[in-house]
Image (cartoon, rainbow, N blue to C red):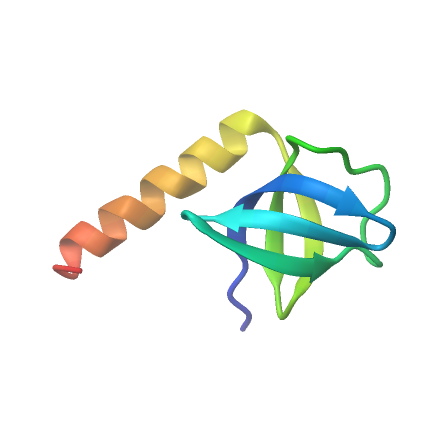
Length: 74
C-alpha cells in the first residue's frame, strides 16, 4: 500500500517541480508524468509526481484528508 499526497504545482524547472502540499513546499521529480504545468494538481508519492488531478478531484481529496484529521483529533 502506498500513500499519495495531493498538492499543487507551484513551479517547474526541467524534470523537477515545487509542489505545495498543505502549505509545505517540496521539490519533487516529474519523470513519471508528462504534460504538467504550473497550477496543476497532482498526487505525490516518495518524491515523485505519480498522477495529475483535476481541481475537483484535488478538492475532494483535501476535504477527505481534513475530515480524517478531525476524526482523529489532529
